[in-house]
Amino acid sequence: MAGGLATRRRWGAMGAMAARARRMDWRWIRYVMASVAALATDVGLFLALLASGMTAIGASATGYCTGIIVHWLISSRIVFADGAAEKGSGERTRQKALFVGSALVGLIITMAIVGGGDAISIDPRLAKLVAIIVAFQTTYMLRRHIVFRA
Image (tube, rainbow, N blue to C red; front, side, top):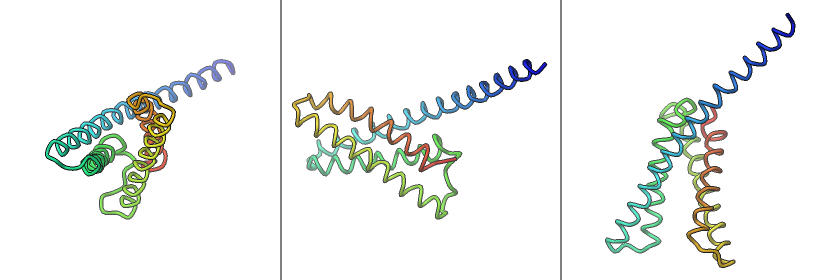
């Protein structure tokens, strides 16, 4: 009898862990989709502004900032809706500031990896790919556990 109870508890705990893992997987997948939308916005605007004659740094900054806004909108309404503070509250303002801070962490990681790769003669496209992966996972963890902690 005691063995049966222990088995049910173990499977119950494992079932609960599996349910949490499934939720986390869907959250992560939604985060990937939000990131793709933000990146498409960033790059699309960057290319359009560049084609219109804007300087590369101005076009890059405008695209990046617009991408952050798109990511915030999707993240706060879809990806992390259960952890987003009420609109107009001080907590919501704090979340926005932390979100921008996490974006800056991602930017610093990207600059460090691409710059470091360039310094040791690694193809910048490869360095950028590595940077995207590392910065993506880092910002996801920051946003999941600090910005939108549910």
